Length: 260
Picture 1 (cartoon, helix red, strand yellow):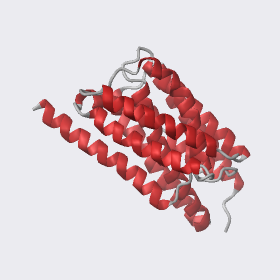
Picture 2 (cartoon, rainbow, N blue to C red):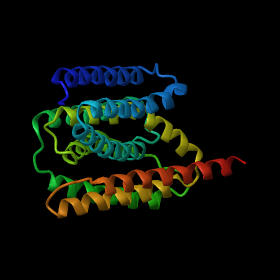
Picture 3 (cartoon, one colour):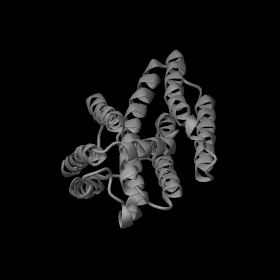
């Protein structure tokens, strides 16, 4: 049994409205911090519900959706890490983060609808720049994240590049891929805000983020040098999310210990 096209189009419409609403609320400063975790969790819960619904009509499509959502979520976590580093202690950080996430969303929408061109050289260049940022962060952040300063200008271009990577890992040209990417971005601004608050409390935040940037940089550089651009299989997705989760747990532990 196939999945009705009308259902997929309705899902895209609802997700676009939800993502746009969340971005506008965050941009206007009307998003209470107590709602951050529920909104982030709602994106994950919605993805699992969509997968279950697709599985009733077509298990193959459900598997495609889950794979695309996992890959898109891993790239969104990379985006959060990059935005936290590039907007740290920037006066207009709130709107800059919203603009960057919006740019990433627009990139994913366009590429998922039209297909993806080769991005190998973009991946290699991006990986090199991320490795340089990791070195800067490791050297200049002995106690917490250093002030981003002029580096904040790279927030939107980095978000666009990661938007390209998010779709290229899943092939593009599919409504299912588009739905997966929109769900992966739901609550991304709030996740940046949560992570930034955690960094302010963790004395070794620069070390943890340096490790994440090195991982992201090496992954992107090797993908670009291979000539194929970024590609996520299940193993890479689990490794990427696991690395981010491990660093987050360690930062929480050190933040709690530092406050005692």
